[in-house]
Length: 144
Image 1 (cartoon, rainbow, N blue to C red):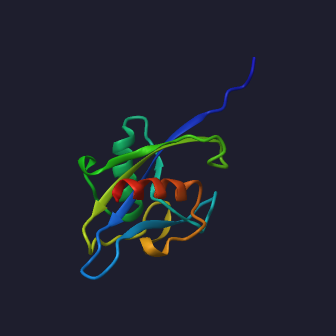
Image 2: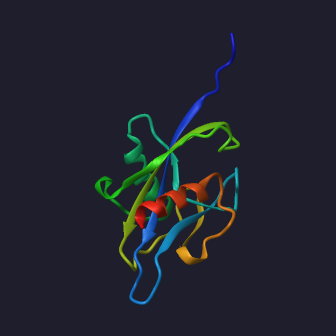
């Protein structure tokens, strides 16, 4: 008999802020307040509660970590990310979603986020936590 690893299910959100006149689109990133990757930038997201869907968790986590509100109908599935080793804590599978919010949308750090920032899509950091650079790239190919 072999031991089986616990699989955890999470939801992440790529939140794009529309460009203001003459500006550029931006993505909302959080600074992680806890290990792993404490202090690194990441997409907002987290664990799915027992009584909710991945989509509902994405909406909840976005609001808890950044104060940005979205309806489930606004989110678009980017994909499922389940590569072994994508999270140093163990086996994590995430469903990633894309949402676009209006120019001027404000965000404030909350829950697990030490800070939040809107980052221009023309100036993305090289070293996002986990596999979030891959998720972001996939979302941007959907967003056009």
